[in-house]
Length: 210
Image (cartoon, rainbow, N blue to C red):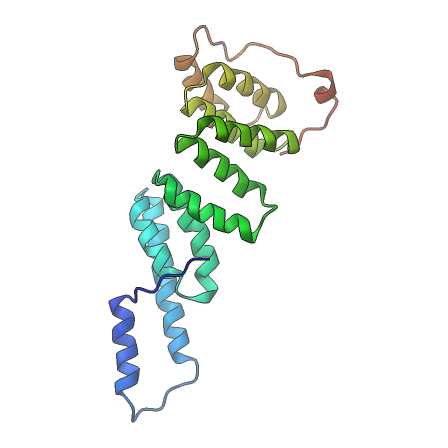
């Protein structure tokens, strides 16, 4: 896990106060509490920037929030997402790779890495990663939804159309279906979102999972 050692000015002032006020009694844990409170404020500021889609600014404050041990990992997760949303694929990939080392069985992290791999220019490699994940998790709605989104974003219209109908058959209540249909209508000639397809027999018999 990467740590950041650039001390914000507000912390420098705080530490200077404690070092200079030698005649005052220090309360045990007070410096730690101040650091935690400041880090929490940085985290909240980052969340605010995420809400207004200023992902680069959010990343700056998530890095500052990581200075406190209790926020280090939560802020790092959010930092990775901020980089991805900002389309800073190199930094996002670095963060997600580190997170996967800590939690190697986390499917959501693997999905994120596959998506980032493709969006950073390694489209074929990213698609291969998705296909492997789909083989292992054929009824993961988030995974299939993410795969359709990726195929649309990289212009793989035919593949996206096929995966769209698979998503529609397996998860007819998926909230992204309408948006995907609109995008596919522009991407694929004679696209018909209401077309009926049948799942393979071995899949029709399986229960749907979210």
